[in-house]
Length: 339
Image 1 (spheres, helix red, strand yellow):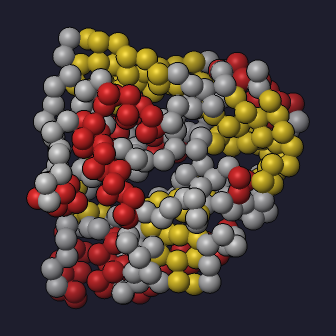
Image 2 (cartoon, one colour; image 1 turned 180 degrees about the vertical axis):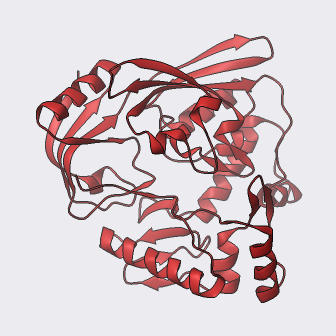
């Protein structure tokens, strides 16, 4: 049964650990709970906002004057179909729990995405990706609740319109993710072309199974990302820029060889290279907010920090990158509205 609490600090619901009170927080464990929360918001003429693990959002210090809907629907099932296995998981299931359960069954496809915080319901919204893999590589379908009509729909992978850290769901927030279905393989080949994984292999790491790769990926992530037990973070705060061939050539002319990866719309470059090698911003601090020393793409926040500190540092970094390269960088972390 849905529960509703009043004046809940958003700092307690987000991994950045910032944010003032939400007027109402509705904890939903079923589709009917979600419907009830939507009806509550409508009856009280309030806006609503969906929240999973709170790991990719920047809440306002002023809080949220509306209904925060916490997606806590749980459940994971596995259905074998010849050489593949369909994994169906409710939106509130922890993403890494899905990865671990798949690995325990020796299923291939999402092992490179091990250790990513948050829920599986948020995974298609962001089209999560890491270490040479993206959710779209295995996504079969997404079951959604249309908040405007109250109807349920099943969207195919193509209908989700997944792109680099983007999806249809960002443009159509009334489509509420209820369940995600992945298509994993019983047999697979380790995908270890990413530099950190190659380095691990050279050092003798076992990368022969989904479980083994997952363990290595989690270990790599622990070395690159802040410890959530001691500080706030939302992981990678900015997207890696995608440049035209001309823009990339101009950047190379200014700064020499720049790492790059092919992309359907141009050339993707690692923003961490620009922040570190071009701007020397590794570990750069402004008050309680700073760029993490092991990975400057990650913004970290001391315990006493506020959302305004995060915002101030983010804007400064954006300006520095633009001034040095002419590149307008985009944020991976989304800012929560105030109402």
